[in-house]
Image (cartoon, rainbow, N blue to C red; front, side):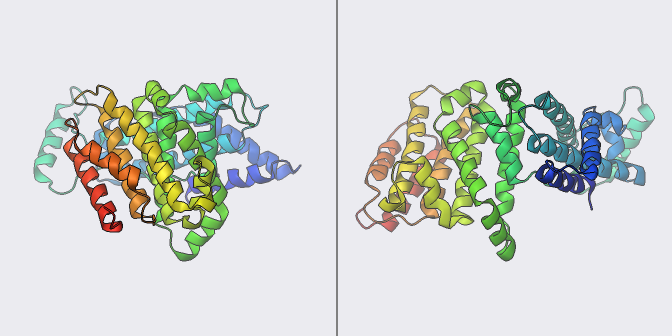
Length: 377
């Protein structure tokens, strides 16, 4: 059993039965607490990884370091999960410990990103540099790099993390502790990326596994969707002011959530939309979908009323919004006669002069989609 998965399973067991007075639970708690303190230090220093060239060598010692790096990353994620799941109002400095564990984890992530980039040997090490140059000219094939294992964070844990970051308050953490993490854009990015990965993993589940996942996680998914819609879709300018990358990832995360609801939780889509949109399920799914799309249209309109720089991450915003609209139209059945306002908005947008080529193609695709579905157009 990989050590990271083992620690994650143990922390889940502990958090489930922590209120029972058992000696074995005390021992387990002591072990987890000790790991949380010791794993905060630099993982690269602990593993004695100080040169990107060494770890890429095709020798047993380097391969062992790569394996240790992967184990360390999973272990740190398991400990972050433990801190989140065991968090209570009377806990002290939990947010600080979570962020310290995250920094150690992020150090590994940033290090692995550099492995596909050209690097240099240690200064003054001419013989090593010459050897590396020779090896480089002789070897041909795919780029060498390290692929870290998929996240071991589950949907319940990421829900707690998102609640801390985006909700005004949570029952298990003090406002001061929650605010410590709310200020950290890099931790927001990690949580949103992890959430996207969880959504994507759920879509590839098959048969019995998908059914079990659907039955056990339905309510958690609905809560996550509410957090994303309320705090990202309905509050995008404030998120952009906080951090542009967080805003873009938030939109991407909501798009993936919509895809999961249309793919895995199809029976619960109307229930989710009833929580975030005015039309009730009795008015039909079509009215709910059109209302959700209208909220995305509003964000597109706001984007094009602002002056946007030629380059920059902000230009991804309309792309993601149109991808979300296309997804919702393609994966749901909307009754004929419901497209009037949307069709008119799209044709008006198509006449604008400052529309980018990729956005124009998305608009054309949506218009064609509506024309194919509804003979009225």
